Image (cartoon, rainbow, N blue to C red; front, side, top):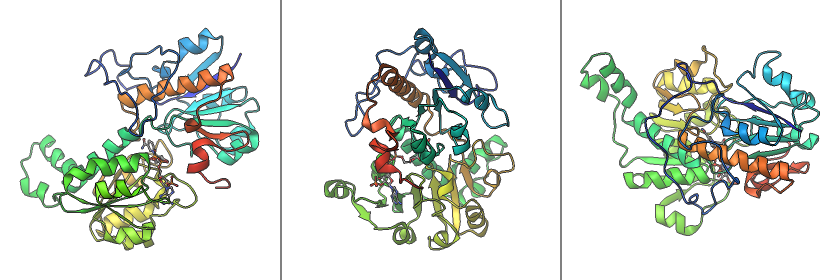
Length: 386
Ligand code: NDP
C-alpha cells in the first residue's frame, strides 16, 4: 500500500469553519474551451466547503484509506526536519499546492527513493524541480483549468481596485474619515486606457474577455498568436514581444508561466520603458518580476501601483519588502483557491489518483512530466533544462 503525503495551508486562525456565507457553489457544465471538469468516480466532500486547508484534506481521506493507503496531511514543510521531509523518505505520492508550496527540490527528490507521482492541486508546477523529476522518472501532474477563471476574476478586481484607488479609500472609512480628496487624488477611470497581457492562454484570454466591456483598448503578447477571429472579436492589438508591448500600456497584467524566458523579465530596464504611472498586476509567479526593481519603481513613481498574489518564497517572510512598499494591493496567494476552485482541484486531484492507482492513463491535459520527459500540457508550457 502506498504512502500519500499531502501538504496544505493551515486552517483559519479561528479554527476550521462550521458554517459558510453561502450554501453551495454554482454547477458548471464545462470549462470555456469545452474541456470537461474533473471526472472522479465519486467525491466525499461538499462543494463549497474549505477543502484546501489541513483539516479539509482535499476531501481525500475516506477514498485513500478505503483503498488501504496511508494518508498524511501537514502544513509543516519548510523547517529543517519538517514533517514533510520526514514522510518524504518513504512517500509514493506527494500532493502539494502553489498557494503553500512544498518545494520539491532536487535534494528532496533524491531523498525520496519511492516517489512516483507529484500532484499539484492547482495549476503551475514550478515548485517542483522538473529536471530532477524527469531524471528520477517521477510523473508530475496538475489540474489544468481548475482555477483559471478564478484567477482572471482576481486580476480584473485588482486592476479596478488599483486604478480607482479602492484600498486606500476603504482604509479612510475604517479609520473614521470622510477624506474624499485624499481618496480621489490617485483615482482614475479604466475606460479608454490601454491594457495588455503578457501571455494569452487560459487566464490571459479570460482576463481580456472580462475587460472588453469596460471600453478599454486591449493588447497582448504571446509566443503563439490567437486565432484571427478572437483578435477581431475582442479588437486586440498583438505585439511580438513584451518589450514592444509595454511602452504603450497603462495597465500590464502578467499571465505567463515562470520559465527561462519569463524569469525576472520585469527588471529595472523593462519597467523603465513603461509609461510613467502604469499599473503592473502579477498573479502568475513572483519571480517574473525583479523584487527590488518593483519596489524602486513604486518609490520613484515610475509605477503608480503593483498588485498580485504571488510571492517568493511562499509564505513570504514578515520582512518581505512587498508588504510595505507604497501603492501596492497585494494579497497572499489566494486567487486560485476560492471555495469554488477548491471543489474543482480537489475533484481533479482525486481523478488523477484514481487513474494512478488503477493503472489508467492520466489525461494529457493534466500531465506535466511523464516517462522521463516533459509530456502532455507540460511539453507545451515548460522547457526542459530550465
Ligand atoms: P496557459 O498555459 O493556458 O497560458 C500561458 C500562456 O503564456 C500561453 O499562451 C503561453 O504561450 C504564454 N507564454 C509562455 N511564455 C511566454 C513568453 N515568454 N512570452 C509571452 N507569452 C508566453 O496557462 P494559464 O493561463 O492557465 O496560467 C498561466 C500562469 O498563471 C501559470 O503558469 C501559473 O504560473 C499562473 N497561475 C497562477 C494562479 C494563482 O492562483 N495565482 C493559479 C493558476 C495559474 P504558448 O502556450 O502560446 O506557447
